[in-house]
Image 1: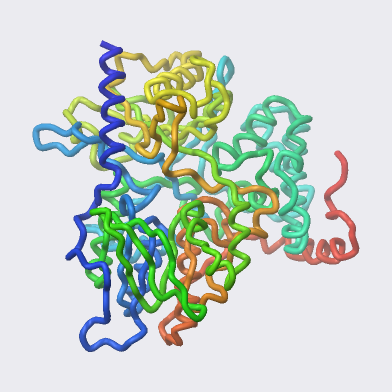
Image 2: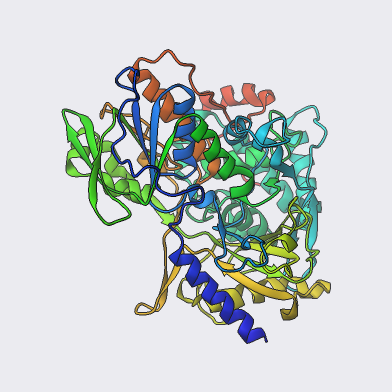
Length: 591
């Protein structure tokens, strides 16, 4: 019985791969590939948005609200990595297919741009539109293999009067107690966070941007608990980065939001939020519908191959459509909202002759972070929020979704699924415990068995073993495809990985090509990570630049900044003088 269950799931994955390009909201609209000005409209208002992920959808939304004629072109599926993915052939008796996904997503409270967009997407019964579909989770669980697990309550803490000693002692004690590590190591980490939080911008970009997180926290010299939780977990698991290459500036920014803001000052909502249903149903599809109402046109199955230039302007984009035919699309403005690895393939010698700084994008690094869903025959009581599997070689995190969704899982598929354990795999390069191979070299069935084994190894010591009998089926992100000849997987959706010094290679949204604008999480943003928030923020910056070039008097997109404790500003001014004089931060002393 178990063998049949695994094999059926593997076939579902292959069907999902074949269907990956199917539109979530409808077919090619009108077959039109050369949008022109609407009757009676002024010239110079046509925008081609190339890419239909969060960045592209955000740009199209903002532009349509300001009266531009927008056509958005997408190769595979609307929503990009943020979408949900129906598992083909699993629905019966009028029920929809089981919902799968690239990987679960969460919306930290410090996200501001995405929630602002969500408030402008109507949703039946919600006074604040799609935004009301976000719900805060009350805890995070940290599961150890052969060790004591612990749960960390989430929610705002009371704000206290600030002093460096109070900050160090309070945060250090909290970390040591909550994470069950030696008190001196909790204090040490609090010191490192204090150094960053009191660093001026010049030091953040001049010193910390070029220092790796692992070197900064001395992860190689600390205890196992410290390395697992405060060096590795905060990077590879929580923010999809690698501790040995991610910059202190980027990871420090996240620490400033998660740990340096216990009162959640300026947050849009709870520290950790998730959607209350499948992403397409409660966000992406209502978003597409809103844009249709605003006049946006959607073209699916369009793969962008080339940008044509004349006189420092883009005059057309060459695409291959669903039939395999090559076509040109023209517009007054072009927004490239494709992932970094796809966008940089468009930078021809003609493009680089005008914007030579774009050549630096070849230095940006991508890696893998993809998900797998396990559909269960009974609810799994693992955590009321996210769970991090601290000792899992594949850096796993998970969340059980039935407890959080308004539409229960019994209403999907064949009606027997009661829960979904959605798992993110953050490390595809380290050998696993079952087959001794990295995920990149495992077949899909081996990936499923290996992830299941690593999770149960973390839970069985607590009497919460996930039994094979509980497993209905599984679904791997269809972006992962097995290459039999190479005996390894390919990934259609790699993730941009922050590396120390990479800010120098990240482009601005606009440059010397007058009508070309860039939107994507690789563009310079405050968040500076591969996130929906970064994609949304970059799209707003691109739209604002486009409005400037167009001479538009439309209201500019609202831009938000990350939280910084105002109480620390005097110390940052002191640090600016110390950095200019070549001195270390006031608190950066050996412990």
